[in-house]
Amino acid sequence: MNQSMNPIFDQTMNMTQMFNQNMNPMMNNQNMNLMMNQNMNPMMIQNMNKMMNQNMNPMMNNQNMNQMMNQNMNPMMNNQNMNQMMNNQNMNPMMNNQNMNQMMNQNMNQMMNNQNMNQMMNQNMNQMMNQNMNQMMNNQNMNEMKENAVLSRLVKEYKLCTQDNDLIQIGCNFGIEKNNYYSWRVTMIGPKNTPYENGLFTILINFPQDYPLHGPEFKFKNKIYHLNVDFENNLGHICLSSINSWRTSGKVRDKPVYTVKQALFDIFCLFYNQGIEAAYSQNMALEYQNNREKFNEKAKQWTKDFASGKN
Image (cartoon, rainbow, N blue to C red; front, side, top):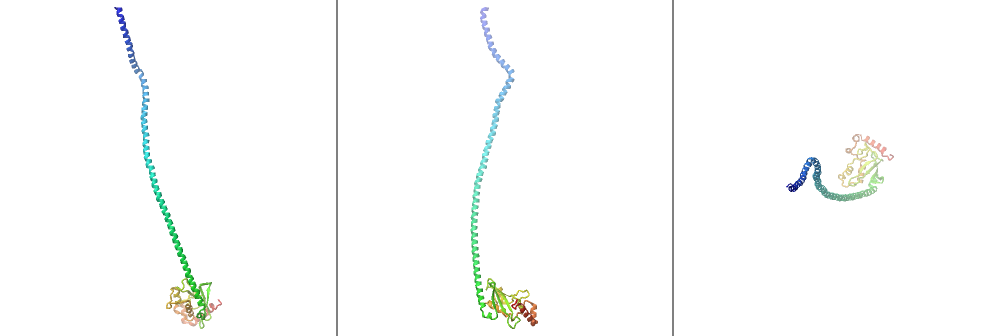
């Protein structure tokens, strides 16, 4: 029985051992796992943590990358903003350039207008200058014509006076000052039976540019003791209403036509008649009225001293 049982027992034992052996590895593996968990866990955990950190770091890095990407996206956004800014800033300059072009065109137009205006102004100025020059030339020509007309009249009148018998009879002798027909020189001989007898009295005649509209100025060149001749200031001016009216206003009262010949005859008459009302000197007028003899003696002496022809 033992032998018969032994094979079975043995077989059973063997099977048990094999099972134990098979189970033991499992158990051992479990134990090993437990042991490994107990003994290896710190290292494995540390390594695993490292590995996980390494693996997580990429994830974190990925997160950081996302942040970076976000940051990079932000530049993209910034780029978008930049594009907007560029669009705004760059397009605005384009718009500004367009506006600038418009302004430049306006300025150019204005410059052209100003240039055209300047040209027009220059043309107008040239026209005005030409007109003024023409007017000046016309005025100058007119003045020359008038002057020539006056000069021609003076030359003609001078010749007539030199040939006039009435003027010759009263002793008038004519001459021209420095070949200028606007300045005559007339010499008169003092009439007889007057304090001025045999005196040579020179009368200067200066004609204006608008003669005969205005008369000439008459004055004695040499001193003469006469009520109506200004001798105190040594000017020789003659106070005669007809001559003064003709010289200042161009008109002579009661004589619509007054000439040099008539003026010389009026001056000649002053040797005979002296007008007390037009006397230059009050003392001389009193002397003429109260002491005619004394007055005549002075007049004779002045004629000898200043009108003898020697001075």
